[in-house]
Image 1: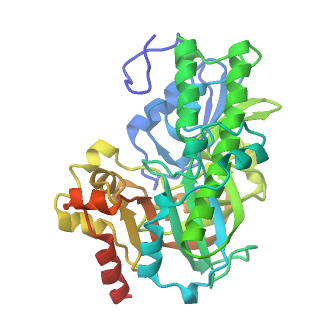
Image 2 (image 1 turned 90 degrees about the horizontal axis):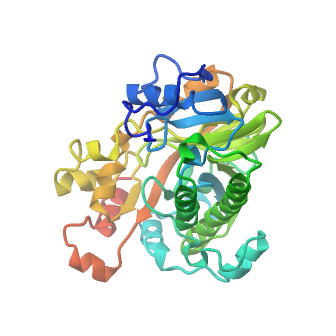
Amino acid sequence: MGTFFGDTSVSTQPACTPATIHHYFSDESWIEGAALDQLDRMARLPGVRSIAAFPDLHAGKYGATGVALLSDRLHPLLVGNDIGCGMSLFELDLPLRKLKLDKAASRLRRFDALAVDDAAGRLDGVGLPGDLFADALGTIGGGNHFCELQAVESLSSPVSGIGRQGLYLLVHSGSRGFGAAVLSDSLSAEPDLMSGLDASSPAGLHWLGRHDQCVAWASLNRILIAEKAASALGADCRLVTDVPHNLVRRSEKGYVHHKGAAAVDPGTIAPLAGSRATLSYIVRATEKVAGSLGGISHGAGRKYDRATMHGRVGRTRSERDDLLRNAWGGIAICDDRALVIEEAPSAYKDAGRVVADLVAAGLVESLAAMRPLVTYKKAVDEEGRARRPDKPDHHQTGRRKHDRS
């Protein structure tokens, strides 16, 4: 049996009545045809009963991303390899008025050199084995993962822990190699994983148990990332909210698969990320999320895939340097040239449009807009910088941006 996710010409299931698909995006949202094709095929997977599709919808490796899907069966492929991935917002005890942007960027550049103290003890504290991928704890990972220092751009409704003079960390990361190992093991053990798993079977119970461990591991990982970043800045941090978006939640009706869709309940405060050069948002889920399977968008969603971006932006070093700055004087720390291009702001949709659609659908109330100050993705050490002289000098970038602000 082939995989339809990467090849829409492959027929994977016999003809059946497809599940109901509810669209929570307007005609003004940019939705690519490939994502809609994947959505249609997901509706025909065994056991699938209902799908909620959100305005950040885009094509993915194992089906459309930006979806909550209710099924009688478990579909590990839909959750993917980054089980438990999510976004956490933290408040720093460092006021905005004391921030020196270039100094903060210089300190955050040393993020990866900071160690996690007592990883085994921290894992034990959340009920996980002390040796469970302990070396990877406190690491961000690649792709669209990041740790971002933010400030409030506008505040439309009072939010506990959010103030105009505060500084905040938004962390996007997941279960790293642990989740990848769980998916790899499932693919090896179940040759017909496309059909899903019976949740009561030994294979289903095993995957659910490992899934739950991944979700707990990923949440702890985001906390440790924030603690490291706060330490680099000479501050302490406090968790405001932690919202995963790659997981399965059990319900009376079955299993809700969140594939890039924030898992919320009425009243949940959730971050909705923009790009490193656009605003992010803080929203509150309404009672109506019960109708969207407890899902909302977790970010803007990709507009162009990674391969396509290499032909669109960053052809020269000057262009790549420009990608590491934003209109607020903010700085992006990313020494991987390919990643700079693939994660360029133009690769993403308009997060403001996503929020507007969610508000129009009655799923959320918009509370605040957050501007990016320093976005940390990936740095190399000084020896590595010497070996790769074509990489942008973010120390100098920081000075230029600070001079402008």
